[in-house]
Amino acid sequence: MIFAIIDIETTGGSPKTSKITEIAVIKHDGNKILDRFVTLLNPEMPIPEFIVRLTGINDQMVENAPRFFEIAKEFLSFTEDCIFVAHNVGFDYGMIRQEFKRLGFDYRSKHLCTVRSSRFVIPGHDSYSLGKLSRSLGISINGRHRAEGDAAATADLFTILMKQDSKGLQTFIQEDLNPKVLNPNLDLEALEEIPDRVGIYKFYNEFSQLIYVGKSKHIRKRIDQHLKNTKTVKGLQLIKEIQRIDYELTGSELIALMYESNLVKEHRPIYNTALKKNLFPYALIKFYNESNYLNLSVISSSKVNELDALTYFSTKKDATNYLSNLCEIYELCQKFCNTYLTDSACFNYNIKKCKGACIKEELAEEYNLRVLESIERFKTDGLSYFLIGIGREKSEKSIVLIEDGQYRGYGFIPYFESKKNPHTWKRFLTLEENNRDTKSILSVFLRQNPSANKVPL
Image (tube, rainbow, N blue to C red; front, side, top):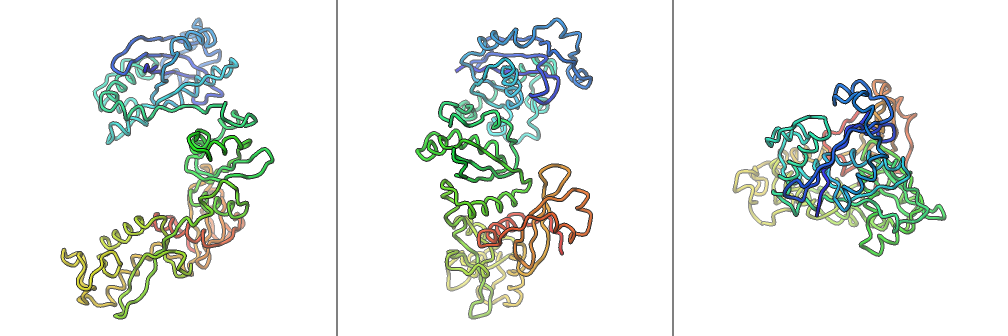
């Protein structure tokens, strides 16, 4: 396996509006450097002053340099059958793909990012930028922000990663989508425009029927995973049917969860089998025992009235772990949290982490106050407030309205509106149905985000 370690300098940060001014390719066999190819390139456009200050490359230096189309064939020949490697590979790979696209050629290669793989192979560094990571590892860079200097430093880093964990490193090799297995009418150029941000995405078939709805913190990455899933019959079938993809950014992950849930309920897409099932089969409840001590217990959510459920869990293990954490933080009794079955003192009492409610050494009134405090963080009963989150862009905030303990809807407000009376925000809302699933999603979100920004009404 041969690797082409690549670094480029450009006129800017956008593949669509920028061009390459310098390229360096270092061939590497996993142990040592085999060969290198380095050249300045004439971008056929002025180089901005701030780029000149950063790289030292100016218009005079590239005036007589070859243009990309003049070295394109040599680049393809030099990197043939190589894995494309770069530090933050998305940028370098995207820029080179765009240069080839201008020539009418669809350049694709297996690729590997040394930023992502470094976080896995050598964890614990304060920064994984090339400059700071190189200093931390003792790698000298002869020519920072020049293609050859940065490519050489990346090659030294790559050597370290290969020696540390060559098998682990190879799991980070990525492949592009294979157009041959996709629906021939799927617009791949439109797909490349989808941002890798928080939102929901929708798959449609040739009859414009909605066949799948999904949500993700990184929708582009998640869509790519769907389109590369050729290992299952269902995955292949879905890929063949997807003719159009729509998406909506939500900024807030909570809004994405709520929106996805309601879209599935409304349209019942045939491939959303997971959301047709109960996402949260376990519920946390409270009750008083015969001695008036407040107990917490996890039971099947199907056996609970939704008004009695404090919060929900997707697995029994998650629920047990959560209760164990509550016992630790609030010094609750394992016996009364049903995590330790006994007729006498719980284990935590013996190690002085329980104050003795299990054997009535602690008064029920005192113990119950701590239990109520422990569950206050995710209670919504009767409360009215807005949850404020990240917007779809910097100029706005996302809002979710909880009114009288019920989910009412979501919206987005201009940033300047966030300083005004919250009662005026209601005009920005998209009203939505409150149901068992939205209650579950909200409950889990509040449990997992105890410091969520709440503005009371």
